[in-house]
Amino acid sequence: MNNPVYIDHIKKQLLDAVNPERLEHGEYIPLDDNNFSWKLGMVRRLDLFLRKWHLAICKFNNTDTREVGKDWPSYADTMIGRKRLDNIQFCFEEVVKNNVPGDLIETGVWRGGATIFMKALLHDAGITDRNVWVADSFQGLPKPNADKYAADKGDLHDTKEELAIPLEVVQNNFRKYNLLDDNVKFLKGWFKDTLPVAPIEKLSIIRLDGDMYESTMDGLVNLYHKLSKGGFIIIDDWGAVKACKQAVLDFRKEHNITDEIKTIDWTGVYWQKS
Ligand SMILES: C[S@@+](CC[C@H](N)C(=O)[O-])C[C@H]1O[C@@H](n2cnc3c(N)ncnc32)[C@H](O)[C@@H]1O
Image 1 (tube, rainbow, N blue to C red):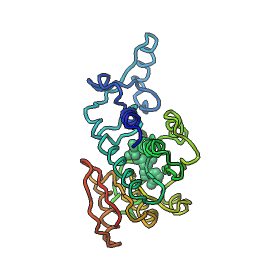
Image 2: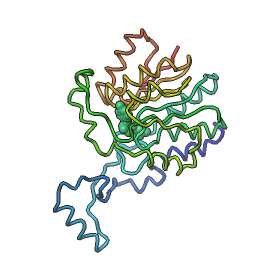
Image 3: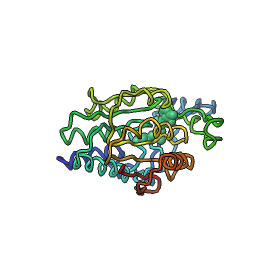
Image 4: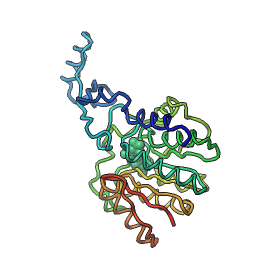
């Protein structure tokens, strides 16, 4: 790492932790069309009325769990918490130290925070010949396809509007950090459509954060063979979503992968490809 102050600041910025005292008592977010479906017409009318006096109805977000990546933050650019950011940094430094060839990818980026961090690490290291691939539908998760992936039966992620972040918002988030350039490549669409045809040659870090069985399996099937020896695969939802863990176990069994799975925090795990 060339500039630890820069990297530390980027982490704080991504976690919305630059001013921790602001979050001491949680966060009050004014309701608006982006974070509330306004099914309650009365509430909507009361809110409009209050706005005349510069008041607003707010929803409360507990931020105690921000550092460990357990909330869906209102403003932070990532929901993965500090330890999982540290883990990206660890994997990146190992890859550079050992000259492991290949680009970096995250499948499931939400507001883009983890991929912005990957790009910041490349920028800090002065590396310009590796791409960061940013793969997402940019419209949230797919409806579960329980006929093909039984483990996803009853999954409700597709109903969560908070998870649908448009491409333009993510691109703007990269711009906020002055980190948008031609080496940031966006793959827009469902993983099952984009990943099989993505023009990616080699990868050194794969980060899977698509929550569901299908989304995790699509990443593994289409990307794992492109991961260089000595490269890292990171699974964000191993502890949080049973179906995600199942997809990883099924894939490892089918391909006889025995590399040791290491724990990052309460949900994230990773292994290094031998
Ligand atoms: C939990 S969020 C990712 C959080 C993010 N990594 C961060 O740093 O905060 C999950 C993301 O995966 C995307 N996603 C999940 N399954 C997908 C699929 N099958 N195809 C495309 N996008 C998918 C959703 O749109 C959403 O943006």
